[in-house]
View 1 (cartoon, one colour):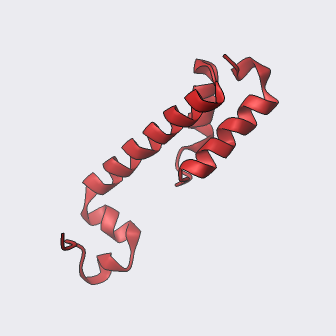
View 2 (tube, helix red, strand yellow):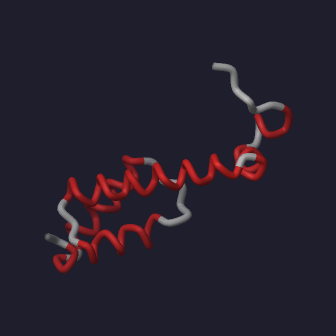
View 3 (spheres, helix red, strand yellow):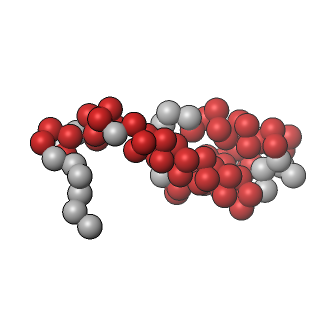
Amino acid sequence: MPSDVGGAAADDPDLYAHEHPNAVYAKNQKENADARRAAREVGLNRQGQDALHRKISGQGYGYPEIKDVAQELYDNFPKYRK
């Protein structure tokens, strides 16, 4: 499927996101899903999930980084464990 990205937006992800606000929404949805998955896999409780969200918000992390942060929270903060 051909890309709809052309011109300056093809070279600048921030410009693309500005021109295509749904791209930002979709990326946020993926990050939220990745955070829920990582929290579930390492065994964070609801308080730990909230801490994870605060720690990764706006960082642009991919799943491996999100899972590392979740594991760090689990290992270092017993109150975040299920």
